[in-house]
Amino acid sequence: MTQEMKPKFKRTNYLIAAKLQLKYVGIILLLMFVTALVCSYFVYYTVMIAMGEKLANVYPQGRLMAIINSVNIRMLITFLMLTPIVVIIGVYLSHKIAGPIYRMEKFLGDMALGDLSQRITLRKGDELVTVAEKINALNDSLKLTLGSQKSSMDKIIAELGELKKVMDLRPENTAYLDSNVDKLQAEIKDLEMQLARYKL
Image (cartoon, rainbow, N blue to C red; front, top):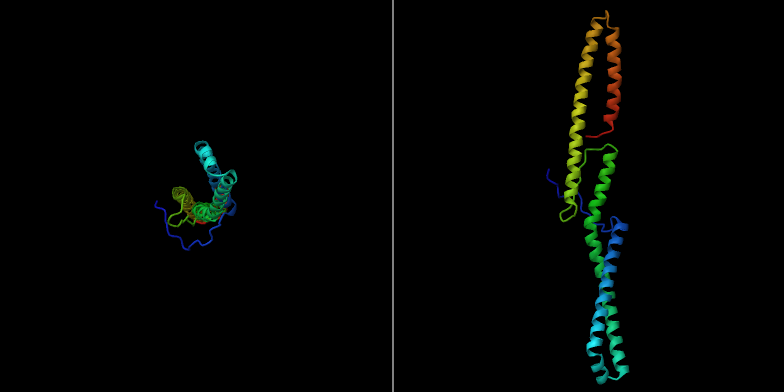
């Protein structure tokens, strides 16, 4: 069954599952800062080993420290300038996952309440399309099974109605049959009540 890709509405709220998305962005920022710090350390360490003595001979110690401090400040400013860009990209990318998760949670909640009439629809470019297709296939299978059971139950009800009419026309020696039909009708009512909670 092919997954429908065009929803009825366009999602404009990028923070759909804020907790999940902010956690995702936080992990990206942490990785960015750790990577930057490790790279900076190795660059500094390499430069200081390779050129430390030569730079100390060319520049006075105070001037060399001023250059190093200037480089540190520029790197810090660059990290701070990159942070909002990383946050925006992280939120944008995470909503491609959080949006489908939100839709699936809502759909499964409706399914648990018995509403099988809906389908999960995702936007073009959303992630988890395969999972949505599998959930839709499960929903279709369950709908088919329950629909078949409902159809069988309707046939049984019709046949019991016919049997009841025959028994009413020939009342002699029908007490046993009458009680069994009543039991079957009671069981069918229970089954009807159970199936009634599902919207197919």
